[in-house]
Length: 339
Image 1 (cartoon, rainbow, N blue to C red):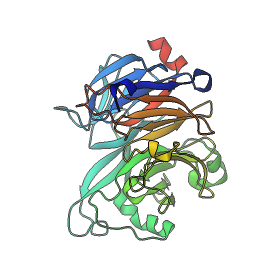
Image 2 (cartoon, helix red, strand yellow):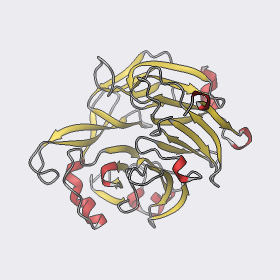
Image 3 (cartoon, rainbow, N blue to C red):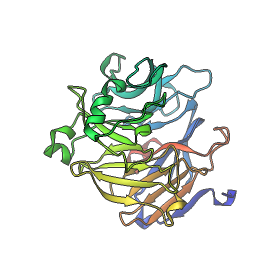
């Protein structure tokens, strides 16, 4: 894409949710907050970042997995970039600050488990929750639950990849309509996304067992699954093995797709990797098609109309990379008092 087409490409104010957008160019050293016109209103200079989110206290939570000459872990910094909390670990792909102040995250561990990968050491995902004092209060190892997945889905997973799940999402379920009807989706259980298995799943927090799974045959290397208040799961279905990406809203009780967004034509949005989405208070959906070469962010209506379209021009502190792993929208009333 030419430089003339970078930055804000489209904005229909009357159809958009007035808010601010946070994103960090992948493998970069800055996180940016932009307004609806695409103007940078705040920048955090960081040692390195893959994903970042803004907390309710105005601090930034981000990972240092790709930081240069800095310990790997999850860090919280204030509005000026000063460290407020740091947990050193083998962080990867996702973390969530919980209402009780704890942090749930994904970590890597090296294991030898012939049931997962025969004959060699395997990179395995661990989900863990830590207190502000860095005490581990919940721990889940993905390799111990492969049989549960296979039993639920009625399939056998291949054993050819060392990074066999490539888990990219962990979310503690909020109160939701599906949870009121089915105990598997109750508040406090944990939703994960195993990208390499084309599978999203729910973990029962108390028993640690996987109690629901969905995706093989429908998904293709998905990202950022999250439970909505209506009890549906929203996710970005990347589609590296087809010619387009899409955003899906899935009813976990029926397994049916109740809403889908594809660009027109579909090939215009093909983010083979990275990416995510967020349902906005006005019913629109904010989409980070960040795996495209131009790092595209967009807002679409329930009818599929693109009403805001932005292409990342801020690649100077990310070795020229425009791609974006995650992006989030925040309400004006949260952001403007801090500006």
